[in-house]
Image 1: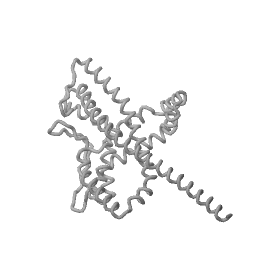
Image 2 (image 1 turned 120 degrees about the horizontal axis):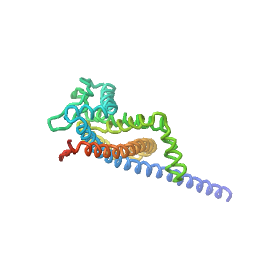
Image 3 (image 1 turned 135 degrees about the horizontal axis):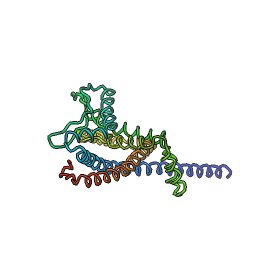
Image 4 (image 1 turned 60 degrees about the vertical axis):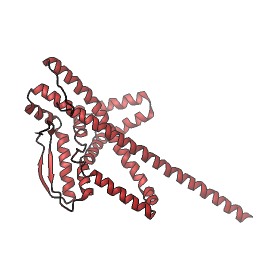
Length: 290
C-alpha cells in the first residue's frame, strides 16, 4: 500500500511538471506569434512612412532650391547617413557571402521615370548565387539598420527604462523617462541619425527581387520537414530564439515609427511654411514624384 501511494504521488508530480512545461512552451509560442505579426505590421507602416517622407523631403528640397538638379542634392544630403549604411550593408553582405562586387556609389541620380536613385552597389549574379544568398544581400540593410537603431536605443537613449515606464502605465515614471531621453547629450544629432537610418534601411524593390524564390524555397523545406515529422522538434527548439529576435526587431521598428512620426510633423510644417513664404506649392503625381 505504501509503495502504491508513493508511486501515485510521483505520477501527480510528473503531470504537474508537464503542465508547467506545456504552459511555458505555449506562452513562448504565443509571444513569438504576437511579435511576428507586430513586426509584419510595423514593416508595412514603415514602408508607407518612408514613401511619404522621401516624397515630401524631395518636395521641400524643390521648394528651397528651385531647380530639380539642386533639389536632388539637398534631398540626398539629408538622408546621406542612412543611404551610406544601406549600400555599405549590401557590400558587406555580398563580400561576406563570397559574391564578387563592382561599383559602389552614394551619389544621387535622377531616373527617367522622375524618381531618384540615392545610391547603389553592383554585384555579379552568377549561376551559383541562388535566391538565398541574393535575399540575404537584399535584406542586409534591414538587418544592419535594426542593429544600429537598437545600439543607439540601448547605449544612448537608455530605451530599457522608457519601455519599462510604458509598460508600468504610471504617468510620473513615463514623464521621468522621457525627460531623461530628452536630456541625452547631443539629443538632436542622435535623433536625426535614427531618422536617417530608419528611412534608409528598408529594402528597395530591386533588393526584394529574389524574395519570392527565397520564400518558395523555405516553403518547400518546411513541407519536407513536415513529411519527415521534424516540424515539432524544430519549432520547440526555435520558439525561444525566434521570440527574442522578433521582440528586438519589433522594438527597433517601434522606435523607427516613433521617430518618423516626429519628423513627419516637422516636414509637413516646414513644407507648409516654405510654400506660403514663396507663394508656391509642390504638386505630387500618381507615383508621388515631386
